[in-house]
Image (tube, rainbow, N blue to C red):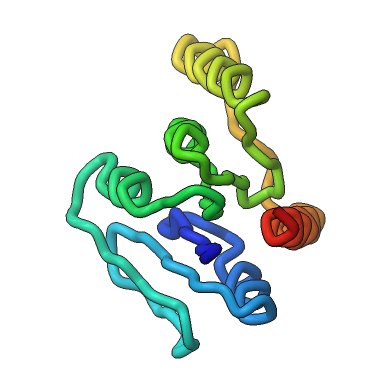
Length: 149
């Protein structure tokens, strides 16, 4: 059964995920390093993991199954989930795929090096309404495509 796992600590689209999941009657697990408010909604769970750098990532990878969806901005986590046959979507609506994950990891590493050497400063633009809208559209498309399989 299709399940959505969310790398929830800094996820800006948790409410949107829960609305879509309710509409499709899907289970959602929010995975976080600390307790957070979760609506009392059927099929929504909060998993608080032990403190640690990759604790949430490791838990998600252990639990995720083929055709589940992970929502994360963490590119290495997305790559690990794709290797297990799952789908990965960024909070901004960018799908991570086996075809683009290598380039995405390389770009991430390059930008990290450029920021470390102070060649590039700053980060991504602020998260806005267009990002939320794109995310909702892509999540809906992904769920429909998985269900059609």
